Length: 565
View 1 (spheres, one colour):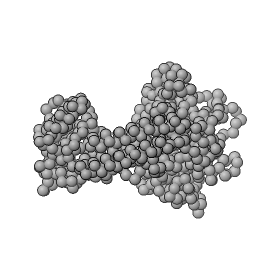
View 2: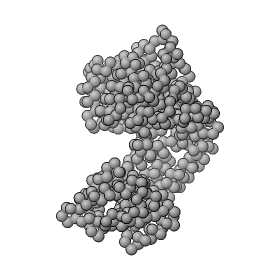
View 3: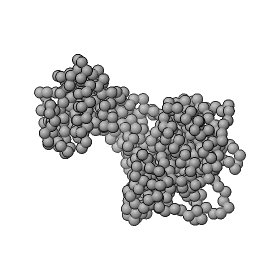
View 4: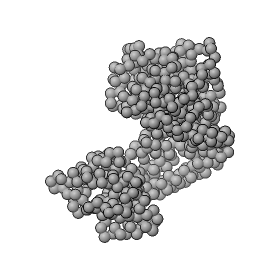
């Protein structure tokens, strides 16, 4: 059960910011437009709305806009019946950066949460988190920013639909922004949703030499010395430490960030090309280029799931594609070409390695990452691998439920022998169907996996290898006399280059009775190699011609003329 944030957060957030230090008496209460995006998580988004209604910041100064990204779980009806929003606005557009809001024929309200207004904008398609927030921004600009002067937004607060937040979060963000008009963005410290005493994200800095984000600034960064001193004092940027105060950073996370609305009008909205990932980092870098500080309030917190828990090959596609486009906005030509060349080479190398390690559709997604950067393919990835199916019918359709079939488990994770045991049990159940039989099993186990050197289960053959190339080659040759027909790969992770077998079976340990099945014949591998070589040539041409990104586009460019370096 998810902890109650108002109770469990106290240890992690023990330092309050006295209001008299931040906000002078007599200053009017600012208006905050809250931007949220949801897709098929109606219970989660409802819970966040309830957390918003309990904020110490006056709820009657919150105008909440929720973008429903074409949910299919009844989100719109659920929120309408539960919270009675003032407006439900249809947005029948095929592009998030070209909104087509329909004026609602009827108005309802007042909403049951005490906000000044609650609006649900319904997109006709899923535009991702990036397109969803752009929908929110466009609505705020078109409707809230044209209201009477005293009701127009001073700030926009971006909030994810799967966070929990203590009551003081909004107030602390707003006070930080009010105290320093040079701050354009202020972010929130993120703590683990299952262990609020553990901080999982604070400071984020961009390394222009690698194109990567890090908890620490790179050597030569203007904030390096002050950050190192701070990190040494508190014990590090993550963990169970006491955090308080304000830190200037390069990037803050969009799971909870407050932006000055006047700066948003200057800097522009999110890059419409991204779909998900790097959109918040891109925005932060553009704010900094426009002369606005990006700050992190360590006393303002949200509870969230660590981002890497959600990673899949498809999600990595967006992160790796988009970060290259982001770098084109902030690096000068020479440095840009060097960094992007290294990134492209890494993608191509990882793609070929994945193919050799029985991760064929993962290899194809990585290859498409590099290609799509070059050709400018935007938005959502159109290929996420073979469909996920029930294990038994999938193996049966591939002709693998026979007594003469050999299925290899590729085991290099400490838990993989247990996963293999549970999969075998599930296969045996399916093999009881008349006309089916239990296949033969072989475990190919790296020698540092616990239990690798023990006696294998009855009826299971085991081959143990080490991480040395010679060991892996010898063990593979030992399978020549009894070649596997299929290989099971757990979690898209494998380091044994098994060349035998017509089928790859990909299994997520969270759902061991479901799988993705793909053919891995000589023909499919040769086709991949041909595509890979063409992508190599395309990447070389792209890097040779690469220059800084220049655009006056509101959605991802520099609308007030501040082009890239």
